[in-house]
Image (cartoon, rainbow, N blue to C red; front, side, top):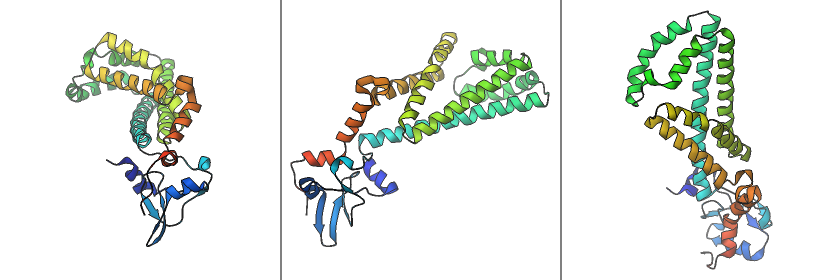
Length: 254
């Protein structure tokens, strides 16, 4: 897949006319239909006036190539975070509802748990031996004060997942920090779960979350790693098409 063309098909081409004569000549071409400018994202020439002009240093930095593929991956992770937030929110609503109607949570839980057994078996997950299920069962025997803590935890965790999803989808640096911190906080809990029982689902989830944290810190240069934000912005600018065109040794087709 040509990720750059995919981006242009959704957002339109991004053309820019730099004031530097040599660079301007490489980005501009004359055609039978008039002047054409090279798209900063996909590299194709687009007939018509450029969308912007000025010094090359002021040119917009568009996502292209590897950066565009990385953005696609981050947005997939954002959707996964939103799904988690929805599930957590539904669980919190369920706890609120059962508490407010004074329904026996324990009786409901024990009645509904067998219905989940067939689905859990499809994932090779034994609910009877699950540490999470055992913890949840003990919570259901707790007093209302404990239930309030559970509700607060579910709501807080859901809001954290929602914030991670928004930050990752919008490709904001603060979102990458929230995702890295929020995910790493729960890694010890996942390790603890693995010490209780090892399943392929837990292992896969742990590997994905650990890989996400390492990827964000290393690739996005968070927390000052590999030069921090300044180095990241410099690398992204150097990967822009303007820099590629400035150092190119070939001419522009006419």
